[in-house]
Every structure is written in structure tokens, then in C-alpha cells.
Image (cartoon, rainbow, N blue to C red; front, side):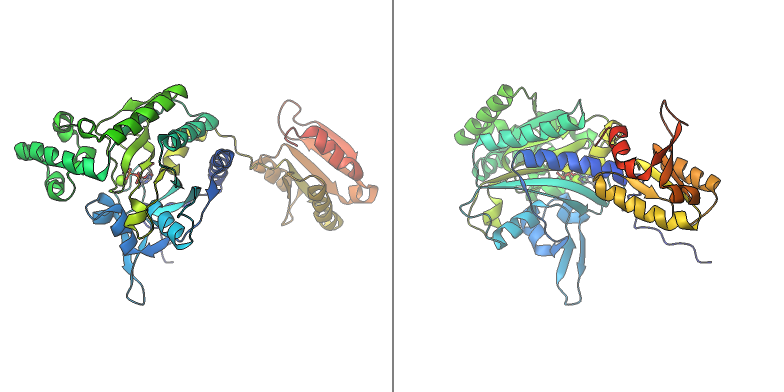
Length: 425
Ligand code: ATP
Ligand code: MG
């Protein structure tokens, strides 16, 4: 026998045991997004490689070493999306959604990065992303952050720290860059290989390094906040005031620069100390220049993305997914088999939301009870040929205080009885 094939390293199956938790996480997130008036957009998983190079930036981890890039049969260079912002902007421009409009968009789905797989870091992972267009002020930045805080509240997640910073405008960053490069050039011997390479192409990214050996040097580097233009300074001050007013605690982290080139002004991250080096659960900010950079008319924009694997690792214990059947229908005998399928259908029609599993595949009563037990259903219905003739069903409570309680009910009375029995209806 050949050995079975394995999935690609770092790309995981989500098994039926886990999907209910994913579904519940996703539905809580969807409900919050809807409550703020955000609308879903869906775009392809594959885009032209050029799109990511132009938006994310050539001198970034993603473009330098993490993209899944391949030639298709026409010889075009395509890439599995490593993130959603670039494709969302591309789709927004192409569908005429951005110019002269206010848009609040979200998307959800798999992203692909060729990184070293470890806990909280995978090669296929899932993000919920939010992008807004047409709103330049700090009120929108505050709304985005308040909405993320609402996610944590609705998920019962406590203890995340909000870090914020301002990257100023392109111009103020260019002025700051000169000071920063000067500083690093005076300390060349302390830079590692990655940082030396970035010194020319993208020196701000050195601040983003997670290498402990660089921490001290980075802490001593000149701060962007000392070189902000007046408007960015004002924008940041108003944002801080709005967060204060909303009672959202934050830490200003002057070294927070974010990995992607396209950010300007506000950047933020929600971090946890519970996931080791994979501590960022949600990250985002403002990217006012990106739409123009990708060929659209200039439109202010801001957004964030959160990693669902990391989020789920934090909240899984707090979720109570609804995947367990309420009722398992045991059918003993040929007549019962066909009557059972019909009875189950009638009950599902009468009670939307009812989760009723009918036993299929035959087997003794005993083996069917075992299956009922394994399904974790609260209630078993037992239908034998006698019951079919009498128009009744045996009902047995399988779990809880009343476990093992049995009674016989009229088939016609079942849906009323279920309504009184099942709390969620
Ligand atoms: P990190 O610093 O952890 O590499 P990042 O800055 O590359 O994160 P972003 O591009 O900002 O991440 O993506 C937003 C979020 O998506 C991250 O905060 C994280 O929660 C999640 N994420 C990013 N890369 C991965 C990955 N390889 N596996 C799982 N989740 C990820
Ligand atoms: Mg990364």
C-alpha cells in the first residue's frame, strides 16, 4: 500500500471537531461588523504578482521571502494573496467603489505566506480584514479601534493591549529617515544582516525588528514622533482624545511602524503575551496614499486585519458552538426506517433551528443507542414498528439531571413538546 499523502507543511485542515468553533467566531465577528454598517467584499485568492510588489513594497518580509509566486500557463506571474488590502483596493478601483464615495468594507478568508510554521504562524492562515475609503479624519480611526474593542468584548476576550503610533505623512517620514539612517550608520557594528540590507531600502523597518539583540539600539534611535508634521500631530492628538473619551486604554509605542510600506499616520496593533512571539492578534492603520499608488484617484483609506488562528487560540474555551444535535432519531425495523425519515422531515419543517439527526445505516437498537450517545444529543426518539402502527414515539432524555427519563408521546404532539423542551427555540 502506498503511504497516504500529507497536506503542505504549514497548511492545516480544519476538522469537524473544530469547524463549529470557527463558525461561532466568524458569526460573532460578522454580527459586530454588521452593527457598524460594514459590508462584505469578496475578491480572488490569486492576483497578479505586480499588485503585491507595488502595494506592500519590495523591501518587506512578505515580498522578499514570503510570497507563493508562480507562472501560470500563459507565463503570467501570479501570487497567492499574502494579505487582503492590496486586492481589496484593486477590486475597489476596478469596480468603481472608491472615487467620491464612503465605503466601509470587510472580507474574510485564507492568506498565504511562506514562513516558518509554528504555533500561531502558518503558511495558510485566515484573516478578517476591514478597509474603509473616503474618510480622512481621526474619527474614522477611532471607530475602527472601537470596533476592534467590541470584537474582544463580544468574544469575552480580556487582557489585550492596544498599541498606537503615528507614522506621519510621506514627507515627514522622508525627513525623519535622514536622522534615522545617520543614527544607524553610527552604530553599523550592531546591525544584523537583515537590518543592514534594509538600511538603504527601508530603514524604518529596522524599528519593526523583533530580534532581542536589536532592542536596545532601537530604543535609543531617534523617534518619528519628534519629526511629525503639524497635521499628523493634530490627527494623532484627536485620535488619542477620542479613545480616552471612549474609555479605551492604549499605549503609545514609538517603535510601532508595521511591516508594510503603505501605512501613513495612524498605526495600531492589539497584542497579547499569551502566544509567544506570535503576539499580534490584530493590526492596522491608515494608508492614505495606497489607492493613488495603485492607479486610482487619491482617496483616504484605513483598515486592519486580524489573524483568526491566533484569535481562536485565545477564545476557544469561551465559545459554546451550536453543533450538537438536539435529537437523535433511532429507527428499529423496516417500516420505522421509512416513517422515520418522513417524521424527521416534518419536525425540521415545523421547527426551524431544530438539529435532528436520523440514524442511517441500520444496526441493532444497542448500536444505535451508542451512536446517539456519541452524537452528544440531549434527546433520543425511538421509533419501532409498533410505534409506527400506534402513531407514537418513545422519547428518552439522554443527558442532564433528567438523564434516562423515558416516556411515550403522540407523533402529532412532538413538535409542541420539543418547543417546551429545547431552550434555544
Ligand atoms: P507578524 O509580525 O506576526 O509576522 P505581520 O505584521 O506580518 O505579523 P500582518 O500582515 O499585519 O501581520 O497581518 C495581520 C494579522 O494576521 C497579524 O497580526 C496576525 O494576527 C495574522 N497573521 C499574519 N501572518 C500570519 C501567519 N503566518 N499565520 C497566522 N497568522 C498570521
Ligand atoms: Mg509577518
